[in-house]
Length: 493
Image (tube, rainbow, N blue to C red; front, side, top):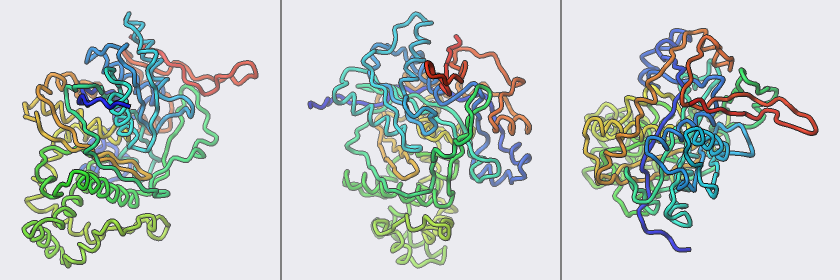
């Protein structure tokens, strides 16, 4: 099959977040948690979905905004992919979104999405959206040349009351426009890095969790994951390092020189501290492989941490480390990189940390403090917020390389470089990320706990406009007709 050599990449982004907001400072008062620590580690606020919303309505809302904001010709769309880990239908996927969008387009006297459009759903924890993006790029580079692809990442992150994950909740969707000669950034998958390894139980969603839950309108299904926080952090760090190593080897890069050369980095962000820790560990690993000056800097951090540099370097032999051996009740709370983590605490206090870590992740980071964890949508949301901030502040990005890193528990990671094109500003100004977050309804303590239980709170209803909702949920289970549990949607124009 002939491969299209025309550059392919991202031409636009659009977001949708539900309006129901919880301020983490308030949440700390309700739950007797420490606000300074939560602010430092997690963020400022998060959103909850309402009873009339689902992963499908949020996805469709983001897609219709993308089509409108970028004046996309629906008949040119021949690849529509959904990346999610919160879907509630084990048969249909992105076709649900396509049907909803076609309804909205008809109400606006616009043509439907192309009938020959492919409609896959991609699932691998938080990495599903990145896999969907790679699928769209490959489609356009091969048999879909000349067409347009849309990837929408939509998720609902919810955790049990009292769990360590509770303050990291969130909900929302981000849609990406993928096409030839992109208007924002090109993506060359030949230069990306991949890694995967089975990790048993760091973060899972076994179907048995849904036992005895009855999905009706006004009572959401609760989607609490099975997770082991400390072990999950270890898996994130290890898979990030392996994916970066794969990219370094493919491109014959000097790791520390490459990381220093970057001005902007976006990483999967389940909460504020995680990407900072991930990049810091990657930087230290790269330092240890550098020249004598790099190693001198590395050694200085080790000595200040009262560590022997050679012992820390030995720990960094990631190819020989089997993370799965920590997947047992006795070792889940152990660090796989205890020496490196101690050294990273010293690095965090150094003058280099601001320049090499925080400054590189600054674009869009402030807006992300008010989103919580969006699972598959976390990385594209940060990218959208970053491009919007760069446009608003007239920051020069053209012809620069931006590094993006996606991660999904289970485990897998993708390191994908983007190259910002000339005149990217014309596409960035249409993202409207801040507008997507503008409308908010702040919850009090009772409203939060009731909504968390999936209850329909009539006192929080708002005038819905230009959005999809769940109109009803089927409850018929007869021999001659069945619609039990199926969502029926409606577009309110």
